[in-house]
Image 1: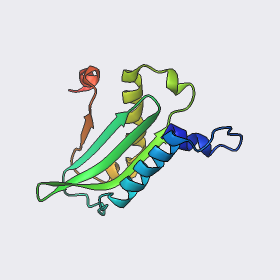
Image 2: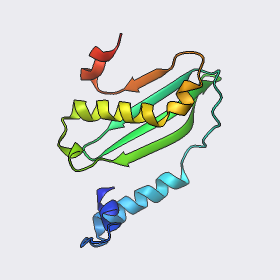
Image 3: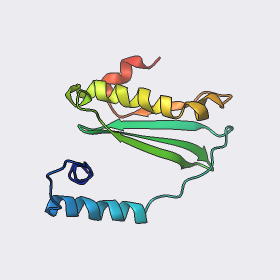
Image 4: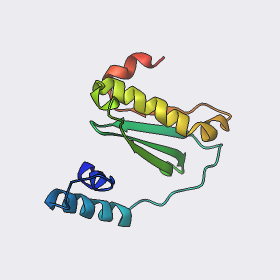
Length: 128
């Protein structure tokens, strides 16, 4: 989505090219087929999922009801220029910290523990 977000800058010299059009079509399709969000309810098991790419962070808070994982909120952000230089394991850890800060109000209301799912194997040493 970098081709699209670069068009949003005030001083942008980018043009709406084929790459931007392709990303726009993907974004439209994602919005049309987006899953329905559920209301947060503290008793069910709660899961936080995070992911990082070269350019952005993403997170999802979900709860398990009737053996289905129901999404509560989604969030994403573009990395700042200094953060773009981080190694991927640092970006993954940054994404986890960022998500936990973002979902803090939800997570503090839980009476039981919650899961954090990270797809980067080098961060397994943080698990206990």
